[in-house]
Image 1: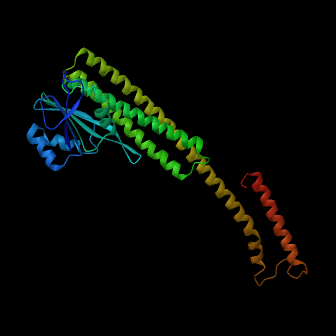
Image 2 (image 1 turned 120 degrees about the vertical axis):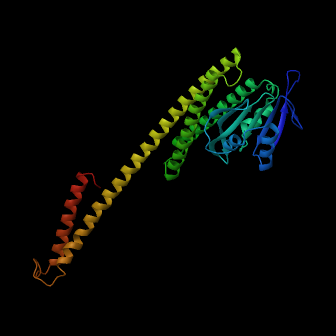
Image 3 (image 1 turned 135 degrees about the horizontal axis):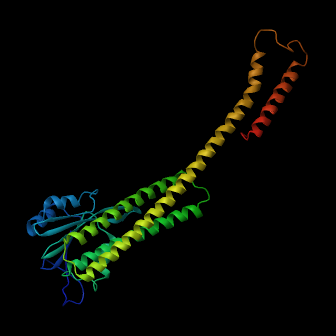
Length: 307
């Protein structure tokens, strides 16, 4: 789906327009094959780079081709309560600003609908920095959400079972993904500052420095959350392992105790002369001896804390 938005300095708010106009924002989400071909032919975009943006594993980077700057980012994407990151391509050209992705990001939809008075499509650098800021906010929102869910599991669930451990592992993967994305994004922004891919004014440089500070903070929060999560999971895994070992010890001890009467009785099942074989009270003597031996071993196991 391709949409066009435009707002110049003379306009009061951002408005959606039916067709392309110079200085507009081209918003292409979940593109079809014919829309891809249209973008390539109409705006002379690099087809290989557009296809790269459709790769779910594409990493943040910057490319320049025929006077157009292709900025690959990754942004948080939530679908059916499953959190991950997916690529978002920004193309900055002299006549347009393109947002291109295989996925529909909620924070972008809200940005275009609810902040129309803050967006100027002709101020491309400012618009790019606004989108970067929204990506940072989306990361922060999801990290806070994950931390709340971890605390809920820890404080509300009386006993952490296998399902909760699986959830912890899933959160680990998400935070690892966030962390690698944040680091890559910070490197990308630093390269934008150094190599001047886009025109930057003094105020823009200050905004970028603020964004780098935000990314550093998000990186530290992600590291801290990941460390706490790993410690929590490993702690419960150790507890589970100790519980299993304790159960195995108890079962082994009781197996030994129960097997004693069976072993003694098996001797008296053989056709050979054995002690007390001719005694009238042999059964009770053997029973007493078996119980005494079981009690003795039970006390030893108790002393060793096996039962």
